[in-house]
Length: 148
Ligand code: RB5
Image (cartoon, rainbow, N blue to C red):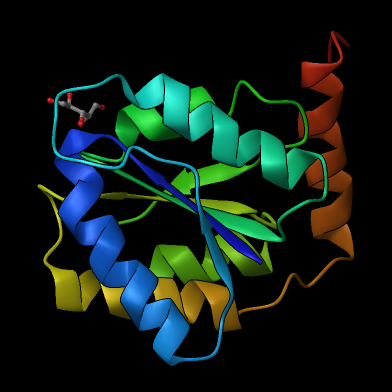
């Protein structure tokens, strides 16, 4: 199950990505917002991120104007590694090296075709583990208050 969330600025792109994902056979759950009425990204981004952290959803895709607000909100949830991507290379490497579990996209930054390309490569790419596991464990230590 892929969690989806957006604010008003990301609503249209989120719905397009939802349709794209469903056409490829993914199940999705939309955590809001449900219209283009102005709202606050932290509300919806945190709901989708928490669903991932709790294991209810495998990954999440968050959309706001830039992707930045959504990523800030999502990364406050313990266990979340959210990345903002505007090109496929970073999306791929964020899976291979950083085991990203949430993708944030900016509807005012990327067009819908590029967003779909980024999303596809992000979903298809796997975490490589090994030395990268040690590094993401260190990042988790920061979250737990450990001084490195
Ligand atoms: C909304 O205008 C905009 O600030 C929001 O979508 C997002 O880009 C914030 O990071």
